[in-house]
Length: 206
Image (cartoon, rainbow, N blue to C red):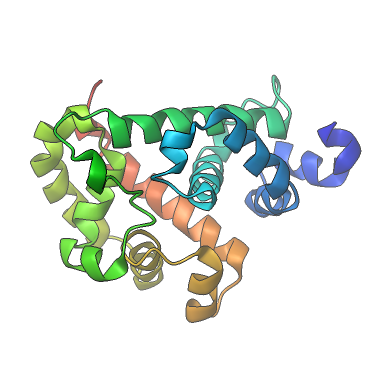
């Protein structure tokens, strides 16, 4: 099905072309949204935005594109696998920790910028990368996150802050930084992959 719809784009994706993948996701956004909605319960959709889940899938796909198993799956099948994992992660984040007040659960990306800015970039990223069951390791990860962020370029820092602290969509970030939406998504995915790599040795074990 993928080959019939966008054969040239699919071929470039299988050659691990990030811009081709970003374009493919845009073209198939409706199909991906429908799939996510079909596997996401109403209780989760009450605390997260569907657009945020799509963005999570897009970022995760771009981050792992180099190791994508396209010898086994077509791009859409691979994206759906990632979507399933992101939905599971979202359930863990919002409903996995009993200590969380259910009435205050919100998506990290849908949070009010005015209330989250004071938390700082490091806290937001550590929260997004750490499962509720791994809270004890957050202090160590916080220090390492601060060190890792210092190694990022100014554009990377600005883009990450706008996306994960201010909650801005990638198109708005692109306009502010005078870049294309695709360029911003690639920048974000590479930056997050770099941060994850630098924190690999203190990654929590489930």
